[in-house]
Image 1 (cartoon, rainbow, N blue to C red):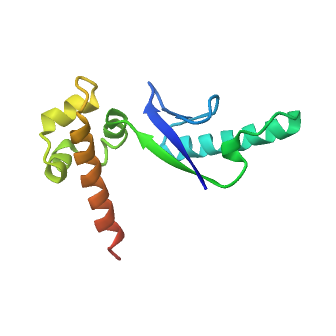
Image 2 (image 1 turned 90 degrees about the vertical axis):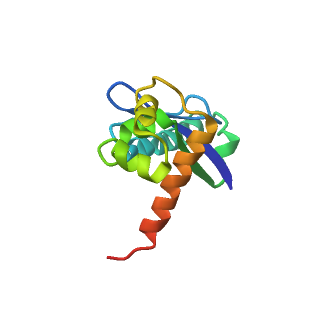
Length: 134
């Protein structure tokens, strides 16, 4: 199975996504689900267009593939600012609220170690939530 990497970024009024491995395929949406669905639809359209016009289908799309979605820290913090307050993120990541605000607004870019710290804290929270039943 081929792994494709999609990058999701915040635009002025929505989110956009593109594939690192296949140029010319993108997606757009107001929510994470919309942008993912749009990108996946774009792959289907590309594959069908290649077949319809007799062009070669990209190697990555000939068999089974999975898409791994990546998001930069700034876009993530902006997307989820209504769910995760800076105070809550500070508690789970150990990163100062003011620093998180700087990351969210693009004033500073987090070091790779800080990005991993945020990612690890969110994954731990996700695992905790998945282990619960209500």
